[in-house]
Image (tube, rainbow, N blue to C red; front, side):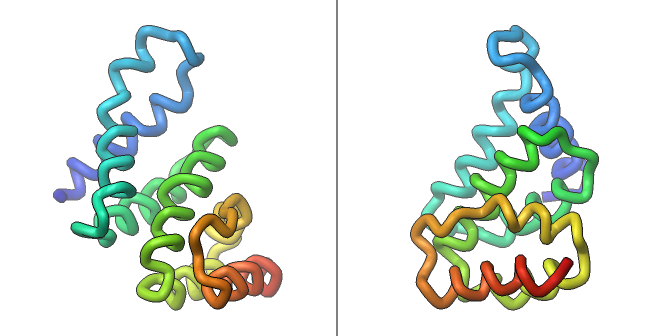
Length: 128
């Protein structure tokens, strides 16, 4: 995925979350939600695309609903399915960036292993 494609995806994903629930404009950006959901449910074809999306999207100004969706959706699913592969990066980023740490605060245990979940809880507490 090119940087332009990623930025377009993030723009549409954020725009989707900004529209009222029944707004016709919301439908225009549904494709972005579907694409991210596809990565979340793909069974691991390329979790790195999901990670790229998360690490680019959280840096943007996001409404609270988008922060909650990013945490409880893409980030939580990445940790549930690939926690062992990403936990070191997540801990480091949580210690370095209060905005990412805040995002991590919206993650629930889901299907994470007990070890990964303990590390997530510790990362949220230790940092900011």
